[in-house]
Length: 344
Image 1 (spheres, rainbow, N blue to C red):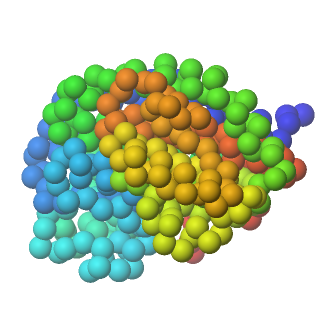
Image 2 (cartoon, helix red, strand yellow; image 1 turned 135 degrees about the vertical axis):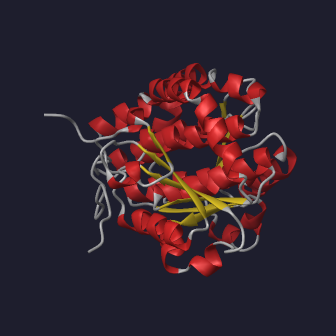
């Protein structure tokens, strides 16, 4: 009999191999992907999903806007379906990038249907499973089987799909410099997990903590949302995400000696972000820093900040995994959750 969390642990640890497979696949499609984007002449891009892939949409939109200099937003699929006029401008040609692990989430399918019915642009889909409704719903459909999972809470699927959106932005922006460095990430991720899995275990199993906050700004805010969601889903712990400097504006009132604040530290705003974390230490909180250099979890990757953000995910996922086990739960089957949300 397999132990609780068997599938989730394997899916977290196998992420670097999944990244390598996905990068190989997309590298082989580079010309096709570039032609698709250029032919569209889009005025804006919307990334959409539900749950974890909504967090992914936030991160992907920030990345696309920075690299492509095109307005981009991340929205829940339900907003595009039910509130299209507040979701996008009808007089602009828009690319809708719909992301779903299962390819069968009702809200995402209905968002694509509503968007196509309006005739406002094209749909590109990203899924992990072929022969699902979303896998044929777009003008271009990308199936990434290396992200497939047995667990309900997304880990490998999320990082694989997110890395795909980063690769798309690099291809569409003709950033061959970034495109080439992406191929270094799987090996770096492998070392990162090996070097810091024990620290994730120590923190996840620390009985002193009763609340968790994940801070990330810019390209990392969506990733902070996802890691906070993982902590909630797997361990049923109090967990919330915030932009770094926003944490001072009220949320810091929750900081006590039983708080762990995990900071996804950037290089571009490092001084401001570390100052926030220093403030939380002075308030008696505990801090975990994750970033490129001089952090408790350091990548030391040498990879451009624009494309290395997937590296923030594995240790944050492991923290939630270990907390789940500490709480005598099964990370593979979180309370009240289903693999796919299907509406009648």
